[in-house]
Image (tube, rainbow, N blue to C red):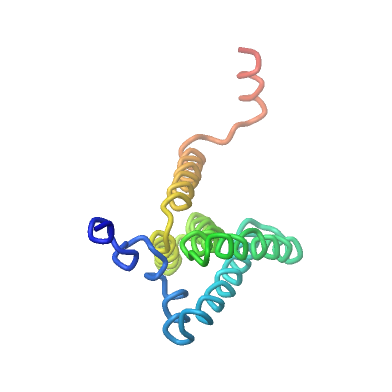
Length: 168
């Protein structure tokens, strides 16, 4: 009776089966080896996203490489193994760096192509599983947007203006 009262796992729209980086390896290599390939892809995406975020943030190649190495090993292996190959968490974890990097890239260089990439990466993160990471990243992006708008609207403080504020 319990089976008929709940949403089956395959019918849940917030599972990683909607992610092509999980679906294709499972189709091609089967559930056992495909899951292993999906974990490797998640780790690669986490490292590449962190490297891209480092480069967009203005870090050098070595610092970005170190950031990518940390992103590669931060949790992409631990989460799927600890939860019995539940790909929702690791696949969203893998996309955090890419979402932030694509958003910062759009903020700096407004072009249609960068907007499309940012929208696709954000949509891919939404459809990979947990909403927790996606909501948190959305909050961070909102803060970035407020800061960017404030920077555009508010005049840059000068030394004289700061001294006036300090005396008040």
